[in-house]
Image 1 (cartoon, helix red, strand yellow):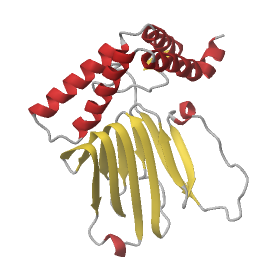
Image 2: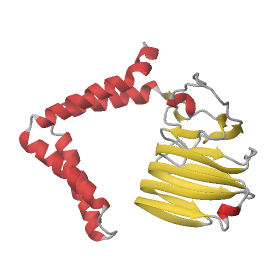
Image 3: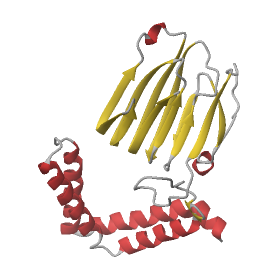
Image 4: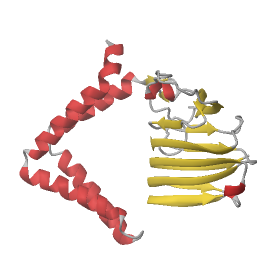
Length: 250
């Protein structure tokens, strides 16, 4: 039974969420309040940081929660979320989310998921499926092997370390794409290569060279001096929803 629920928990959550949306749409005033809260929330992203922006966020979030808690379906959604937490509970916190440190990570004893990257020569003419892996399995600590021209890493959330320091890079440029919904990401880059950073976030921060840069729907771009002339280069693109990206050069 538990295995069945784990496999289908997202479908159950989607059904509960759909029921919530349909109930909101059937309540005229409540639905308008819900839409208004979303409009204010999106608008707050474009408002300069200050008191007015803070007030807009408070009003939008208050309206959002008032609207959804005026429905009966919200209790079904909360029940499914509690079930989700119970199904994936573990000795160090929730095993699905791989909780670690920071305010988003209340289980102080949990470890960060370590992901070593090893590059292999591309297999020319390859047309069969090499590997298929779930998001849950991808969050386990391990070393992954990627072809030089196909480095695409996806995380759902949690605290992760991506180590590029123990692999031999091919000549010229390698592109690495990392996508993550939420949580902290630490990226380790070898010092003897040129690299270009392109980091975007809905709401988060970049920590690089002892400096912290806040990102709200923005991009952080940086590249080493003489990047184009460097024999081995890394073009790194990171997209996160909510969280911090720390770039460590060793």
